Amino acid sequence: MARKPDTPLKRGWTTGACATAAVKAAYTALLTGGFPDPVTITLPRGQTPAFALAAESLGEGMAMAAIIKDAGDDPDVTHLARIEARVRQVGKGTGVTFKAGPGVGTVTKPGLPIWVGEPAINPVPRAMMTAVINELATDHGTAGDVEIELSIPGGEALAEKTWNPRLGILGGLSILGTTGIVVPYSCAAWIASIHRGIDVARASGLRHVGAATGSTSEAAVRRRHGLAAEQMLDMGDFAGGMLKYLRGHPIARLTIGGGFAKLTKLGQGLLDLHSGRGQVDMDWLARESVSLGTDATLADAIRNANTAMEVLTLASEARLPLGDLVAKRARETALGVLSGAPVAVEVLVFDRAGQVVGIADGW
Image 1 (cartoon, one colour):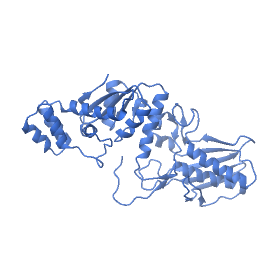
Image 2 (cartoon, one colour):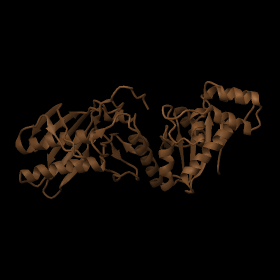
Image 3 (cartoon, rainbow, N blue to C red):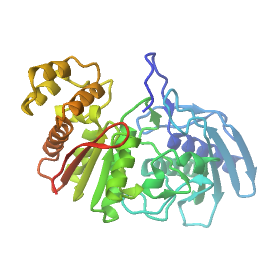
Image 4 (cartoon, rainbow, N blue to C red):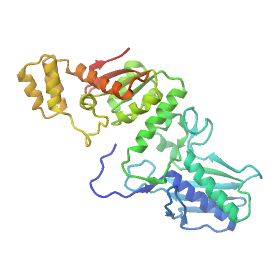
């Protein structure tokens, strides 16, 4: 994750909120001939933000409105993306239907809250847009039978920077959001993506997944076990969020891979591995080294080391299998969180070059 600034942060709007505002503006124009600008919507928790239109057009039986997404101070790949909604009148009795336009993805794998073959528009945004259509239709004495086509120009390229390809969402971005509000640097979106990755893996019948703290360890895990991209969970620093979900949604085999420092923290019992929320405990490493039979001189050197990398170097020079012990302790932490769930756990500790310096497995 990007580094969070120390100054107060501005909140933003989800793609779902922007799409709902664009739909409301477009359908209003379809019914009345005029676009409300700005257009105000009601979010699930009652807030009523107003959105300026970036573009509008009105034709025979169709209206289009566009909103530029403002993600506030969150490092969101969709910040300043253009969310377009085309609302078309369709045959009576069809209700509200959704279509993926350019830049909006389509679901191709089971396990997500949207059926395979459907546009990647999550349930809450769908409900928000449907409610807007129904409310306007009732106010104007019509049935509200419309097709909503959502597009995000450039969305297919932006989606490559997200988890969508691994989740089997192809062709573009998802329309997301449960509250309509983007909280800058929130952990919730990342953890939710880990959960969806587990859901997709289970629905696809996968029996082995990997979870890595970063790109180097991910590549190393994949090489070691020949895992496909869709078998990798984007754990990052959120070991706890991943393990707690696996406890209730188990997969037969789990490989956790990470650098020495991150997995030392997991071995210490920390479940959030971010440097801002927990540090490597050099005293802990020194005590663990003593359990391996190290002498007082090396234990003191470990205790007084500046970084975990220095500790790893000291242990390597002394041929001390500290990496294996860190892997063992990290595995014990993971098994404790899994609390008897039928998940066999392997932990791999890597150096910065992606070489294994510690291993603990249960299969």
